[in-house]
Image (cartoon, rainbow, N blue to C red; front, side, top):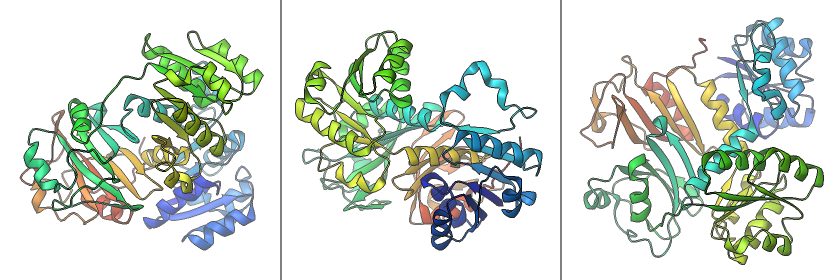
Length: 459
């Protein structure tokens, strides 16, 4: 498959790495020659320097025979024009654009992106993706990561194990015996900064960060088994009144009358704008790093603080100060993945990486057809892939124990006839079943072979 990626920033680079690693023909376009040089030296991709909205630049990138174009530059307008040119001049079959401005996504203007207007097949909104990720973190306060699968019937939970976890030093095989009715399985473990897929003889240790795939009805029980208490988040302080903070506040207002949210925004105009668009949320104008301002927002009585300004260091400091003041839970927006190891020492409960959420969303749309959902783990170290099993798949009709999955792959759950089933060795995978797999990055191509998944662009 031939793909053109416009924009060699963090998102473009990550998508290029992913697709090039899967042996696709990838060309990266950017007006910054240094960024193009960096990506071509690090990855097996071609590079073109120039503005992706220019027809001659797309022609040099090979748009005439491209299967897909992904416009992920920093400019919404460039991304939109790039998709228009790709469709109108080169008849590229599928176009994806990253659009940050919420104005373009107002339902009033939904006709704008029709094929006979601005032909964009898929619109990715980073702010909306991040806001949704933040809401999921708030919904599962005892976790550092969470994502829904199988239509909300199953969930991936990221759980940090403390010294008082009751199942430490217990082989995973024995956990299955002790809690035989629990519809949950440990699919990944991060220990000493290394992520791996455990086997049945592995034991869990204090300080481990584990990924658990759980039936939705067993989430609370799963958390309790791993030493976590569940509590509803009803008093929330949001630091940062931009698109992400505003999106979270709107969603909280729509979901529950019991949630009391407050926003702290340092920019007066933005604070006033947020206040005009919200009904029950209190908006305070001030600096979220100022302890007096945090106390005015009653941070000491808050169930959670959500630091979502556009500055990583501000978000980290706000989270630390909020916890010191007595806030029960701190979630920080962090763009730089190298800062992730600081979360533990700083006692920050969870973080959201906008790049990872955007990359996951784009990958989900790229692998259309049989793949129903994809979630990127960490710095694209692994993925959870939800897909439908085809009749032509090598795993159809076979017991799980007989399937030669790579060492870096584990089945998290199977859904058959709308019923989510915990995977065991004697479970037979049938054509039409939905399967969720935790797969290390190096093993993803083999997963796609086993699932007979190909990138399908059919409308």
